[in-house]
Image (cartoon, rainbow, N blue to C red; front, side, top):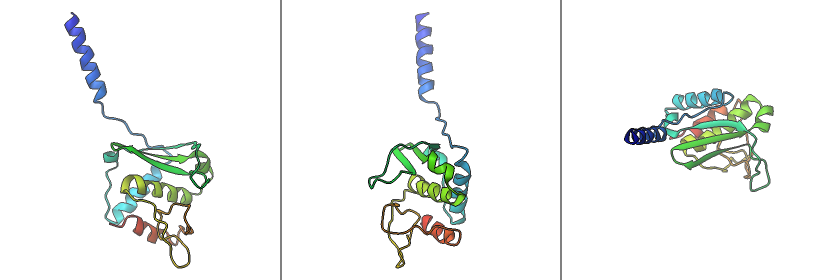
Length: 157
């Protein structure tokens, strides 16, 4: 009898340790993730989100950046098998659709494309990349008329 108990106990432990993890994308973020994937496909970049184990959530971020500014979002890739992107709930609730898109695309640029910050600028001081740090010297110019060129740069091969 004890052999069977031990067998089922070990079987249960084995199964629970090898379950596929369920990754959750907040419903508020999902439309922006879908847009990101579509824009990548348009530019010849296909991304397998499941391969990154992506979780995305909107919650209160209680930290500030090194320059004293507010952290609006971040990508946590501490575990190579699971990437987590978090967006600040306070910012999210007041942001426009385009501001949310910029933030989500920027953080997914880190999490899914492996992009680093790029604070290079045009001669007029506007940022060349959607991947600008927000703490650099370039000025954000992401809007409906510049969106396409910024997305071309984001998804460059």
